Image 1 (tube, rainbow, N blue to C red):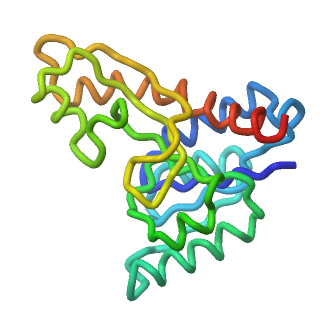
Image 2: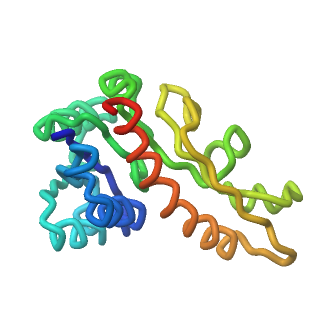
Length: 195
């Protein structure tokens, strides 16, 4: 069985979409893949309750308890590696990862970003798209590299920027698409890698 470890910091809505897709799509039978664990850097992350309700092991590693980003990432790697991951999925994990962490999971570390990369890497993507006068925005699933919001693009979804859009309204529309493309990209990773 191929193990997926998902990292979250908050509501975990993308994690929940992946878990539901795995259940409904019978990933265990079809892809020999399963969500083996959900790990958060915040004990109050709402997504942890969803994972527990679905019988998925959880772990919390508070980044504030570590003297440096490197120390936290080393402990995080040790926690993740307990589950022998074939794929590590960042699903709203609000930490910039060290080069050593990224290198450790090269080729098996995915992220979703709320823009049509390479446009609007970094933060405040929705407001930046509106301010730039974009007619379209969206989301991108990509392999993680040491460079922020770069790496091979695995999936994208496009949504229109509507007249009078606020960043919040655009974000909500983009999020509905994230919930569709992220599970497809994760399933596609296993069908391509191991199919």
